[in-house]
Length: 353
Ligand SMILES: *Cc1c(COP(=O)(O)O)cnc(C)c1O
Image 1 (cartoon, rainbow, N blue to C red):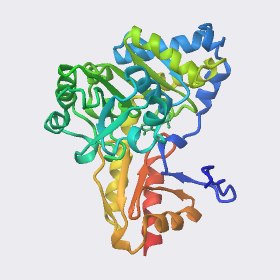
Image 2 (image 1 turned 90 degrees about the horizontal axis):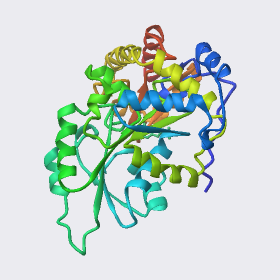
Image 3 (image 1 turned 180 degrees about the horizontal axis):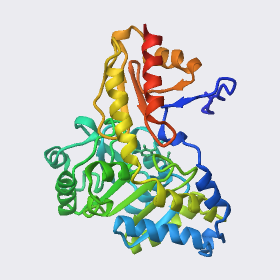
């Protein structure tokens, strides 16, 4: 079995990329910022631009300290490794990214178990969490970490409300657990809810932002939390090969994203709503009403699988992603505009007809 990604068909350009907000290209302004970045050696603490990114992100999230990482996946793995010991149990939604899409990292790297909690749209209730708390005993795995995902990717980009987060965090803390947020799309939630990110994560111990999603940077994520936690986490960053050198070039792109690409996430949410309305009118397609920039749909009524639907769109220059036999995902971001959304819907209507 080869796990290498299939080489893309470069002969048919993607004109309207609804596959993922990870596929945005750095804008001219962002590239300019990268070229002009002052750099040093990140892993010896001498890259001023990486420090600036960490300081800005820590301030944005209201946390003491932060560290720059190559990816969100590494933020999750380093956080789990730092928070937990072998044999510990993490509580997370059963469809969370950390559970389903990180190659078993928590088990392979940290030797921890994940207990998956059910819940609508990627969000579980305080009651569900309470029911999963074990009475400490010599038999039970120690439950040391609660993990929440904001927004919930597989939940259709749904947002945890601040009160819902506080409720589950309070329960976790009362049982001696720490709370970690996969904040891959936290800023989408902040824009959608109209609440500062720092307020959303006020009850969360550690949290990271992905700069390669809606923020549009080519590489990087930043993990934030208490200074003592970040201090310890650095050994795991080093151990996993996540320490960088002239990281400032990438950090400059992330700083540019913080300065230019947060407020505009509202456009992505408006485009997602328009896309959902348009797709819902295509015979045979049903759509999960989006909250942010992710639009999941079901192709059952068209007689096509999601993969067949995607395959018919691709030669037309439209790219969408497939999540299950009949379930697919479209995603809006800074490289698709309202006119392209309209065009994509027209193409979809044609290919299922
Ligand atoms: C993309 C994503 C990740 C992983 O981030 P990478 O930067 O791709 O490693 C983790 N969690 C969620 C919810 C994501 O959407």
